Image (cartoon, rainbow over the protein chains, first blue to last red):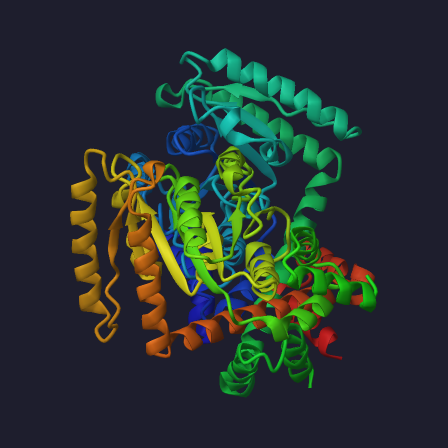
Amino acid sequence: MAGPDLDELVGRAREGRPRAVARLISLVEDASPAVAEVARRLTPHTGHARVIGLTGPPGVGKSTSTSMLLTALRAAGQRVGVLAIDPSSPFSGGALLGDRIRMTEHATDPGVFIRSMATRGHLGGLSWATPQAVRVLDAAGFDVVLIETVGVGQSEVDVVKLADTTVVLLAPGAGDGIQAAKAGVLEIADVFVVNKSDREGAEATVHDLKQMISLSRRERRGASWRQPIVRTVASKAEGAEEVVEALDAHHAWLTAHGELTRRRTARARGEVEAIALRRLHAELTDLHHGDRLSELAARVVTRELDPFTAAAELVADLKQ
Amino acid sequence: MAGPDLDELVGRAREGRPRAVARLISLVEDASPAVAEVARRLTPHTGHARVIGLTGPPGVGKSTSTSMLLTALRAAGQRVGVLAIDPSSPFSGGALLGDRIRMTEHATDPGVFIRSMATRGHLGGLSWATPQAVRVLDAAGFDVVLIETVGVGQSEVDVVKLADTTVVLLAPGAGDGIQAAKAGVLEIADVFVVNKSDREGAEATVHDLKQMISLSRRERRGASWRQPIVRTVASKAEGAEEVVEALDAHHAWLTAHGELTRRRTARARGEVEAIALRRLHAELTDLHHGDRLSELAARVVTRELDPFTAAAELVADLKQ
């Protein structure tokens, strides 16, 4: 895509035109040759959006909760972009797409933009594509970017780490409670939401969570943010305001403690690293039109070389 | 670890002493500074072991099937090493460890070595550590290396791709059938095992699988290997011999068609790439004692630089 066309596209996206936003996300998601140019043009217009991650085990009502949160944020006058990450697992890939249909009530609202991110087969996967898409939505003037992902793998967690604020959803009942969630969740959660809180077992889930939080606080002294636990019934839109309040409180805390800049620097650091690594990876596999790596691999199979010596030769070639 | 100690350790591992094998795997899994030296010393002794991957959705009886297969292979006089990969998800990490207990019947057999691989937090994760551990077991003289993993994420699939032969386990019933497995499985499976085949729905699962296989064969003409479907009841050790026969048939096919070398070259290629990338990644983050990346990230946050320009500067520094 030539420069003037790109300028026009960026201009239309900044006017909030959904087709231009969608087109830009496609460009960056596919890592098209234009991706660096797109980032260069968008960067000056970024830094406004609050990035909120939302995750939790399957079955807790993530899509319903996202929809509820969308309604509440819209009522508060916020423009919201949603990135819905489909797990790329060959065993469950795309299985949750049906849930997206619930979001159709927001489809005609010009203040809402919803995008399902396809991830399978992307080099660097989610960690590559998601920050690029966040940049597009930020530059397009969305006040909030919601990243919704099912919390099943490390890559999903890595994506949620991109957020300024991470919401972890739980629900009472077998497999959905904190037994299913494990200790790692405590480390990434800024706000806990116990959904389906009208169901049996909700009290026990909240109680267990409180215990886990106080245990973890003993380990990380000095952190002055106390993760709140909000009870919701997303299907009845109960608790929406409390979730928004918790998000606002966390954002105020982030700003007051310099933590917002720290998190965004960590995010930028990860992104710069990912771009540099992707570039180096491409250079490695392209060396001598790809022949160098194949030749080294063949010599490893015949045991003429061990793979570390082969890798050292490859890196030396790259630096020449 | 100094050279002579390492030589001694490798010597003891090659005599089949389990503690020496375990110690070597720990060294390579943790990517200790000795890892390249270990690989260098082991490489001349490798190339003998058949690497078999075993995966499938949760609940199909992977541990029981692994145990059954172990018994059958041992009866055939094979020494078997097992790498049991625990999912590194913060939501399910380690949840399956209890299943390992079932394997205790093999714990006192000197012809069996079982290792649970801890993966969370490793840079490069499974794709890094698993080939290293396979090399240790191969050099230690195991005839078969079984990699058992729950098939929930892309990284697990990547690991199973390391195998000479990949077994995909399914079982009848909700969530365990091919509905849960999706099309991606067809691409990685060399042998299908329908476990719990005494249960209702087993016929339907086999029937569905047959249809999927014949559909996929139409797309990949020329591939002369027809994925067999073996029915088992692992809890009663039914079907063990048929699985071993299918594995042997696939190995013979791999050898006859030059496919074994092709797969092992692809594996070596992936490993050399991973080692080179890890090294480049370490160099990137170490540039100017880590200050360079932090400084660039800070300039991205203030929008002075876009992340692609920052990454280009980082790569240029690396090559200086």
